Amino acid sequence: MSIQGISRGLLIAGALGVCLAGPAFAETKTLSVKPGAPTDVPEKFANKDVAIAVVRQLNVGDVYQAWISGVEAEADRLGVKLTVYDADGDNAKQALQLQQAAATSPDAILIGWGFGDSLQAGLEAACSAGIPVVAANASVEASDCVTLVNQSEHLMMQGIMDQFKADMGGEVKGDVIYVYVAGYRPLDLRNEVWETFKAENPGVNQVAQIGVVNANTAAQTADQAKAALSANPDTIAIIAPYDEFTKGAALAITELGLQDKVKTYGMDISTADIAVMTEDGSPWVATATTDMANFGAVSLRVAAGEITDAYDGNDLQIPPLVITQEDLRTKGIKNVEQLGEAFPALATPNLAEAPWMAKLD
Image (cartoon, helix red, strand yellow):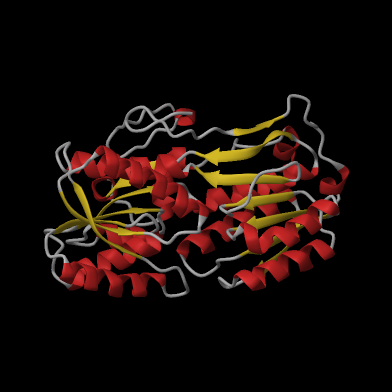
């Protein structure tokens, strides 16, 4: 899938029928339900005798809470027993938890976020034991036993870049602060689009790069942003492609009284994010997102499907939307439930849905 055109307020990935302007980053969805996938409910699922271990690196923040709520809801629908391991952002702890999970011989393992180096031993243990692994937003490679489920990160970043350029009248000139931490797969992929955007728009002057990922990301990003804004008074925007980054950027801009001069463009959405975007004078003007609860549900669904060998391929991309502050205000959206009603494309109930799964509804 390539990026080819844009519509204000709605990013259209090829799977949703919308075109985007920008560089041709490949977002290839290579996971599909096999034509001959089982139609009858497999015995283990019928007997509710399926166990899936969830090993997640990050669990503090709206994004991660929404994701796990989707995992749990889909597990309940499919009759799956979950064991959830929370690493609290500690890579070594997640690495140990993955090995512990593999040692319990679950029917599948679902990884939420994490780094390939620290997870390698656990992945090898799971694969050697014949346990299918699904990695959601983790920096690992797909393989015969590891299936990836991710947001279309390039499309998400391209969406807010196109929105930023449109808001600037089609030509971007000025000082920009960028929020980024290397090593996280979603952020690294988004950064590829940012680097291309800068090259194609030489009027963009990145005056500072800030960012931190920990249990206090928003607050610490706000502190860094205030320092960067004070040092660079001609800044016109903060590009902050992760909602904890964006909340911090918005807080810094507001506390310095710069909301009429500096705007921020973000990523992801939650009820708390919607409140920030829609408050009077908010500098957060656009975000690109999938529904994180839906992302969690799809992730769990793929893990369940892998147990029954339901798919061809090992890499699934979930298409995103761009949501503007104007969209939220015009439609009176106050929470993610209303957002889903206003933008039904955020829900993808048929994505990776094996035929037998519908019989469990």
